[in-house]
Structures are given as structure tokens and as C-alpha cells.
Image 1 (cartoon, rainbow, N blue to C red):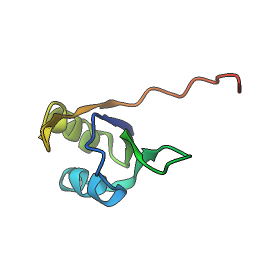
Image 2 (cartoon, one colour):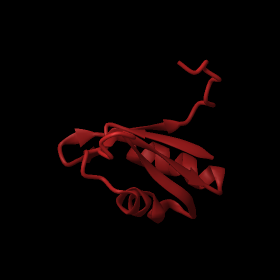
Image 3 (tube, one colour):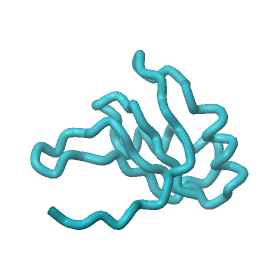
Image 4 (cartoon, rainbow, N blue to C red):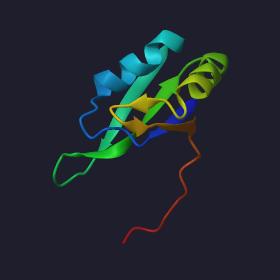
Length: 86
């Protein structure tokens, strides 16, 4: 299951994101999205977990959790829409 994680502190790394979800089960990947020009975090990321039950448990426990003064937004990621290129 692919999970959206929003309102991340800008200092969060991929390893931090993986460590946040690891207690709930097997994390396949964890990516903090970065601005392609500055390389700075955009404040959100995606985590992929192999087991849906573990993913649902992580979503339930981490949604709204305060990390460095910021309440996380955690939910199942929606499929990406095909958008026309600019």
C-alpha cells in the first residue's frame, strides 16, 4: 500500500521517514519529495508498505501525531492523475 505523509518538518530525511513507519511493519520504500531546483524538502512524502493491515495500523496511529511541532497528515495515497505537461 502506498501512503501519503504530509506536513513533514523540512528537515525530515528518507531515513527518518522509514524509521517513523518501521515499528508498524515492513517498509518497502520511503521518499521525501524534494524541489528539483533547490533540493529542499517540499514537506511531504510517500511510504510504501508490503502489508495492507500494517499500513492501516500505521495510518491510524500516525495521522495527527505531532512531529517537531507539526501534526502529520497520513492517509492512503490516491493514484496520480495523468496531467498534461506544461
